[in-house]
Amino acid sequence: MNGWLLAIVQTLVFIGAAPFFSGWVKWSKCKLQNRRGAPPWQPYRDLKKLFGKEIVLPQNASPIFRLAPYIVFSVTAIACSVVPLVAVGLPTSALADVIVLVGLFALGRFFLSLAGMDIGTAFGGMGSSREVTISSLAEPAMLLAVFTLAMSVSSTNLSSVISTLLLRPFQLYPSFIFAAMGLVLVAMAETGRIPVDNPATHLELTMIHEAMILEYCGRHLALMEWSAMLKLMLYAVLLVNLFFPWGVAITLTPAALAFAAIIMIVKLLLLGLALAVAETGLAKMRLFRVPQLLGLAFILSLLGMLSHIILEVR
Amino acid sequence: MGIEALSLSEQLILTLAALILFTSFLLLAQSRIVSLIHTFAWQGALLFAATVLMASSSGRHHLFISAGLTLGLKVFFIPWQLRRLVVRLDIRREVETVGGASLIMIAAGALTLFSYYVVLPIRELSLLSTRNTIAISLAVILIGMLMIITRRKAVAQVIGFMSMENGLFFAAVVSTYGMPMVVELGVAFDVLVAAILFGIFFFQIRSGIGSLNVDHLNRLTEVDK
Image (cartoon, rainbow over all chains, first blue to last red; front, side, top):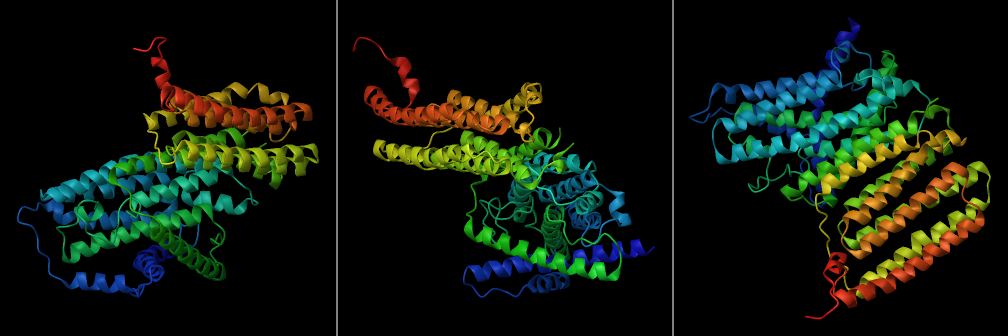
C-alpha cells in the first residue's frame, strides 16, 4: 500500500515539476545569450493563463480534435508513472517495461499527428508528416539503445535495470557510452529541441511540433504544451537515471528518499544546463539533414550493441 | 566470465577500442577533407592512449616506444603533412559527396559483425584479457578497405589506407603485446615514406588528369585527340 502511495506521489511530482524543468532550460539559455529571461516558473503562469481562456474550435473539427489533447496528456502521464524518478521497485514500474514505454510514446504521437491533420489546414498536415517522418527514424535507434542496456542487465524493466546497475560494483561499459550518445540524439529529435526543431519560434518553414498544435487554444493548448514539457522531462529523467543511476533510492526509507530527491534535482538541473549550453552553441539543422542525424543515432546504438556482443561477453 | 572480471585499465582499453571503431565509422561518413584528417588524427590519439595503457598495465616497456611512434607519426606528422598537401593543392573547401551514405554505414556494421564471427576461433589462441578487441581491429581494417573502395578522391583513399594500418597496429598491440621492435620500426618508417610518396603522387595525379578524382583515370588514352 505504501508503495502505491509513493508511486502516485512520484508521478504527481513528475507532472508538477516538468514545467519548471522546461522553464529552467529556457532561463539558463537566456542567461547564456545575455538576455534577462523570464523566471523558471514562467511556464506555470502560461499554463494558468491558458487554462483560464475560453476554447475556440475550428468549424470543421471532428471529435478527434477535441479528444486528442486529453489522450496525449494522459498517455504521457502514464508514461511518467512507469519511469522511476527517485525510487525503484515501485508497483507502477513493475506494470510496464521500456518497450511499453516506447509504445506509449507512439500512441501519443499517433493522436498528436491525427489532430494535426484533422482540421485540414496546410500547416497541420505538414507538421504531422514531418513528425511522423522523424519519429519513424528515431524509434529504431531508441529501441536499439534500450536493448543494449537490456542485454547488459538481462531485463527490459526500467526499474530493475536501474537497481541492477546500482547493486553492481562500478564498471566501465563501452556499450553504455554509445547507447547514451544514441539516446541523447533520439531525445533531441523526439522532444523537438534545437538541432531538429526550435521550440522557441513559430517559423512556418521549419516548425514541426508547433505546426501540429497551431489551431489549438485555451485548455487544449495548455494540455498539449504541458505534455510536450512532460516528454522533455521524461527523456531527461531516462538519461540521467539509466546512465548515471547513483543516488536513486533502493530502499523506501524517508532518509534514502530525501537524499535521492536532492541528488535527482541536482542531476536534472545540471542536465538542463548542459542542454541550454548545447542549444546555444548549435544551429538548427536543415530539415533534410535530420535523417542523417538520426542515421548517426542509429549507428551509435548499433555500435553499442556490437561492442556489447564483441567486448563484454566472452 | 564477463567484463566484470577485468581490471579498470583493461576495461578502459576495451572502451578505447570501441571508440577507435567509432572513429572508423566517422571516417567513412565524413565528407569534408579537413575534418577527415582531424578524425584520422583522433583515431591515432586513441590508439596512442590504448598502447600506453597496455604498456603500463602489462609492464612491457618496449610498447612505450611504439606508443611514442604512434603519437609522433599518426597524431602529428602525417595529419600535418596531409593538411599541408590539402592547403597546397587548394582543396581545403572541397566536399566529397558520399553516395548512398546510409547503405555504406550498414555495410560497415555488417563488416563489424562479420569480423566478429571470423575471429572467434583466432581469439582462442591469445591468452590476453584484451583479446576480445581482435574483432574490433579486424573491423577497422575492413572498414578502411571499404573506405578505399567507396571514395573517389585520392586523399580520402590514402586516409582509408592509413586507418587500415591503424587497425593492423591495434591488432598487434592487443593480441600479442606488439610486434617485434624491428618489424614495428620498419612498418612505422614505411608508413612515413608512404605518406611522403602519396604527397608526390597527389601532385602527379593532378597534373596528369587535372583533378584528384581517380575515376578520371579510366578515361586515359594513349593518343591525344
